[in-house]
Image (cartoon, rainbow, N blue to C red; front, side):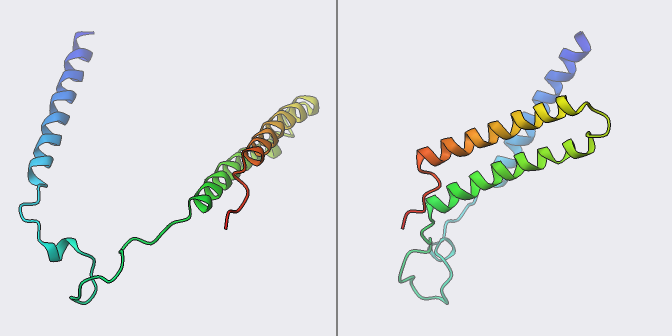
Amino acid sequence: MLTMTTSSMMILILSSIVMIFTSIISKKSMMDREKTSPFECGFDPKSSARLPFSLQFFLIAVIFLIFDVEIVLLIPLISTMKISKLLMLSSIASFFIIILLAGLYHEWKQGALEWAI
């Protein structure tokens, strides 16, 4: 128990020293207006350097990724068909698909799937 406490304290101290050292080294000493402005061939920028980003597109992309990962989780069920009982396999797959459909219904009712123009 004592060695675990000692090693935990040593790891904590060492990581703190490394974080403090890197924060000291990484400080920028000189903030120049030309270096902080976006690059436009030496001219002053005429518009904002940041482009507007559609939040609705981001939400649909996140929902797609969530459901895509959940569909990937269904793929191993195909390989377990040989070793498991059909009733158990179908109940697990049905439960998982019902959860997916419930999530899709919730997102649809919340209006997250409607594309706002």
